[in-house]
Length: 230
Image 1 (cartoon, rainbow, N blue to C red):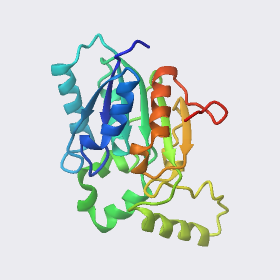
Image 2 (spheres, helix red, strand yellow; image 1 turned 135 degrees about the vertical axis):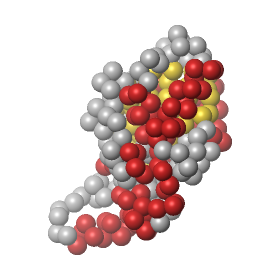
Image 3 (tube, rainbow, N blue to C red; image 1 turned 180 degrees about the horizontal axis):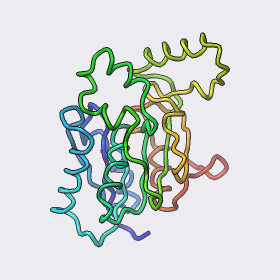
């Protein structure tokens, strides 16, 4: 992959482009040309936001230059919609960070109790009905397993319900990053999947996560324990 490949960074729900700045700075030191894409995560639905990304690229990007996409949480679902509906762009590789590819239990609870908190990001996105990943897209998925965050009360309650149901579940199956279950991040068509001891928001400022992201963009796989060096 040539240096200066453009990487579009996409933030998550209730965030802004500035949240992706630490990741952008790290990738810049690795020779990537970055852009932090901003969108209205509550006021606009997923299709509107992926269409606006397409429009921005039409005005600001040479279609002959390949693009990498890196996104946090809801932003990863925008990637899914974007690569499905705008296949004309040369998407090389994608990395999602804490993205609930299979839908979000936490968002389900919030949607039922306080729908305004998730706004238009729920339907066709956090509800698990986003477009499938095209076969040709190389996707690396990073999940967090440090259970601290604003969604923790909902997930603790849900884990309690699961345990009371009598269904045998391992601690691995109950693991989450404080907002998203590890199991919710798994996608059968993903190229690689990695679980790291970080929280849902903390992964955005974690140097190890940034290193793994850059490594996947260059190599199409994550570093494993025996290879990984801080």
